[in-house]
Image (cartoon, rainbow, N blue to C red; front, side, top):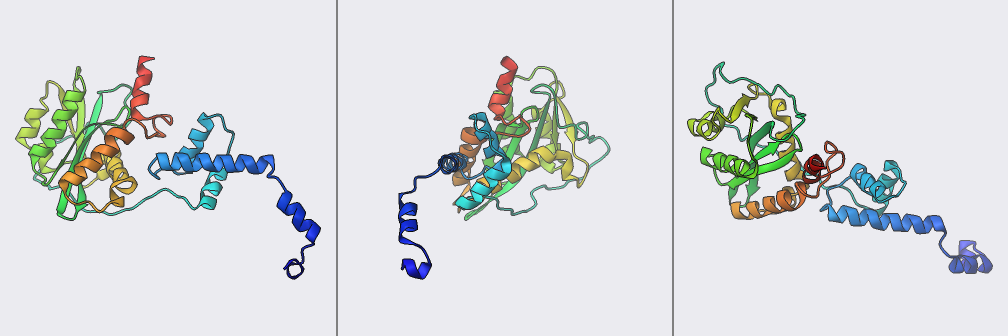
Length: 269
């Protein structure tokens, strides 16, 4: 066999007895850490976030190297992209103003909340997720999963947000122009004494880009991995993602590679 391969017996023996170099040992160790971080993120993190975590652990490594090691290990972030429309348009007038005007970077919490509805496909039919985000930290402060687009479900998410935050000065609350967000019950739940209503321009999702991005994120990073049975199953998955990962663990570039929870915690320092 050695003759067929053109390898000498002494060379083969040296190769068998060879011990791994320090560089090989380092590479093996880093790869193991990359796989660990990748799995802890539910296979969500790509090379930039994994690099940031490795550097926070004291390792000196380039993002390109991390990407190469991930390819060698056959791992990559999970992304799946479906789409359907959830906004039910109604008649509008000039009273619906875009107060936010794409100023997505408030300096303090409870300055701007954004909210929207997205669909979740289940075997039993569509379920719907209403989310409320504080733009300061991108933290989801209220959410609700329902089987319909009824306004009452939007109000449940709003009430959760109000219960989770102490509203002092009036908060800008921004949404699209769906019928749920211009209804009498919504306006009563977000009274002018505590909220300043802001609405996206008609047919312009970029005016509410942050919450739209979150809904795309939860689907491609989490929900689209599963065959979801029904709204109850969807609720369990949403809870797991938002409450045990997104708000408290998942690092965000906007938050300086911190979770929303840790980013808000810096205010107390």
